[in-house]
Image (cartoon, rainbow, N blue to C red; front, side, top):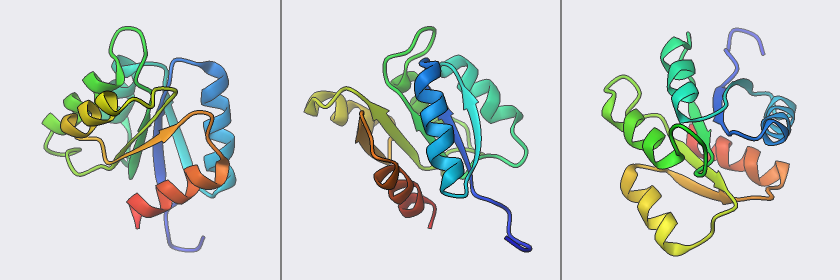
Length: 127
């Protein structure tokens, strides 16, 4: 892409396998990918990122800080408050979805995901 920076996506997931799958899917879609292995690391990567990501994809169930905690923390930071956050999780219960929405999540994708649906979701929230 000439003169246009690739859209950057931060993925936060404690599964190394899932991180690899996300990286492959997103880089294949033309995105720049940065990663954190849990909510604490995700926040550190977010704050150190230059340029900051255009979107965040996070798992819910992680050690140290879960996805809900990450979403709430990001929404409290003025400079990152606007970044779309997509929850990618095995959880599909309505109460978890409602809690994620209340925390500030933009969207929800249930694992296992298809590359096409993931890339389409990122395209939608970063358009």
